[in-house]
Amino acid sequence: MSLIRRRKLTKRQTRQIEQNQTVQADDATFAEGVIVSHFGKQLDVQITNLPTVIPSLPDTDTNKHTDANKPLVQIGTIWRCHARTNLPMLATGDRIKLSLDTTAGLGRIEHLLDRHRLITRPDRYHKVKPVAANVDMLVIVFAPLPKPAVNLIDRYLLIAKLNHITPLLVLNKADLLNEQNSNDQDAIMQMIDEYRALGDQYGFSVIQTSTHTKSGLQTLSRHINGKLSIFAGQSGVGKSSLINELLPNANQSTNIISQNSQLGQHTTTTSRLMPYDAHHVDKGGIIDTPGIREYGIWHLSADDILLGFEELHALAGSCQFRDCHHTPNAKGCALWAAAMQGEVLPRRIESLTSLIDEAKAGQSAVKPSAK
Ligand code: GDP
Ligand code: ZN
Image (cartoon, rainbow, N blue to C red; front, side, top):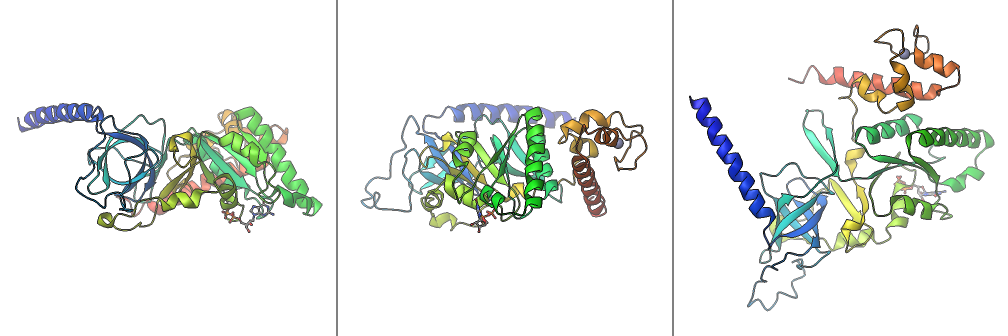
């Protein structure tokens, strides 16, 4: 009996919430914006569309135009916000509707607009963490120096695949190619050729850049223009240098973020969207997030990991044993048989098995404590 009553109540509540949300989404005083920073409970939103009815500014306040701490009701300004508690998990890159409290200089996120993608990752405690929303491209940067960790590139290709994001491989520091000894140079050129062949088959590009000679920067721009991208790759390959070239004003845009006394100063940013056009965040940009570096693979099964290795995925069903570990001496392994014929790359199989091993090791490490 009590169960039924509770269910009825829940239905009514749900309907009420839905009604509230529809009314709210149409509210003429709401502005539209994009979440550009996420600090946990606080978020920064850059305004992309003004409300139909501009909220009245606090009158009789003669200082209102000189109060530098309060953001203006203008396209391109950034408002520190709280989010309504009934909203789903929000992430940098999300498009939202917000109400503006012009007296306090604070916003409140009222409604989540259409989202075409949300990258999340589980942490060690099985809590799902948002990485970023609406990301179109994962730019995987590598360089002749530090020497490429092939496994890392394959890992990012897997993350892109699992999240339905187009990868773009960028060999930065291309100027160093001429200076390297010829063995290293041959190895890296071969690696590029191999990824180009994979990319031709599976729909991604491999380009070369140099922030020193500025070569390839326009090509990179063309690939990511108008899109939201995340840059990933080993430390020291030149990600920050590339971002500085693409967004020379990125540091300035952080300064216009309102420092509101009521909500305190900036705490550690979990992620930040740097728009190409400071006043039109909807024209694309780069999201800088530690989430992509912290994207563990321990929660993935061997089958999940195979998805990131499309050329091997098709073959794995033909291994003699269902639980084949695809080690070089595994009996009846179709992957190694294909490698012997030169159809697939041995190092891709090695990448696959090392990622599967890593996931397994992570899983067994987390199980005893997980309840
Ligand atoms: P990040 O750790 O990936 O962000 O790498 P950084 O952008 O901090 O760059 C690491 C080092 O590589 C710095 O000393 C840069 O000056 C250098 N670097 C960046 N781009 C290039 C390049 O195109 N060519 C060369 N030779 N060095 C570069
Ligand atoms: Zn096998």
